[in-house]
Image 1 (cartoon, one colour):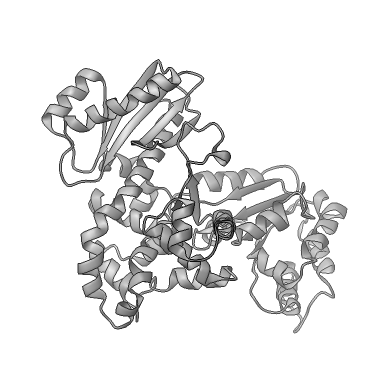
Image 2 (cartoon, helix red, strand yellow):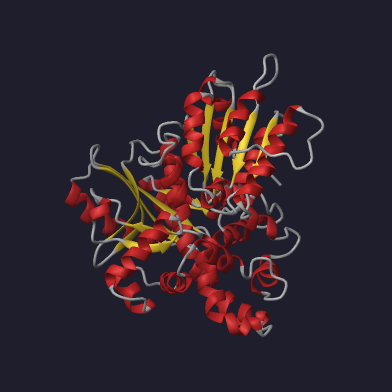
Length: 471
């Protein structure tokens, strides 16, 4: 099932139809759908799709050599291989022939090639400069190790720096696209599924649309014997990290609500603050965690108000419910963990994702011109005494969009709006705001009194259905 990725496919198509050689860099976390995106893009075009593995450098060269040779030849000599990577890369120029469609060469898991042979980026840079840049070739380098792709391919010190013609960091699907995997679910369950799995296509495809959400959780996540996702985070992190035990401790601390650096340091037991800071930096580079600061901060990287959060929904879920209950789940107690640990806490767990979805929705409103100013920053806001779930603000235009989110089974009443307006008084005075637009996001709708008050005060009211169906 291939869903959405309209913008990404359009970018790839623009590169394909450009009148020049193209070196396109696509990267992103594992399971985010890079390979499927590229397969969809090149399915009706002449192409070589080479997927690197952890095999030896000579075996990788042999496999690519045979694909290159077989592109224009029917019979491939047994055991054929180019004598070197430079010879193989130079052979790519022969794929471009007059009066034939433009060829695409995809080197998927390019970081595996680099791990096996550190010279490959330099070799490719040499051949690109001397030969390939003057051909009609479209070369796509794709990788999952974000840090390595950014340092070894995109970085200023990388041999290939300045050669790329386009690049794309592929991100998870948004809420509305993720919901389309489950057309039979209610908006509530579509949202909860996204809150648990995020927008990772592999995870979404693992769940069965014909099963209930609870059945899917027990069967595909909690079941230690047959659950496809039971060990998924553990395996991925152990593959990508040198000291997984320390990272696990840090991620578990964040999943349990330790969001400040000192709290994470004390809870994880990994070491001193400086040591934990280094681990946190690496996790941020991997796009596994994010450091949030109030939307009013003018220098976010220097702010002392930063709060850490696991950026991947499924990691958040896994470290909250699977990792702490590993022993019980290994003993086959998945039903007990579901009933006693997961279900009673699921609404509390989903609240953070509801706020995240509301912020993304606010960004879409701004993008579509439905907020009468251009926000400079969109996020949450907090100080020592209070917090606001959603704040889109323009200090230049002295305007703000302020909102509260309630993932509750009870309709939202007038008290919530009054609280929001009271919280905004500090911002209005502190930043001399001339215009504040108020909004509420509710799972269970609104009381009739609030609906009347919202109409009279031009307050925007949104439900989970609005978030799920936004595009």
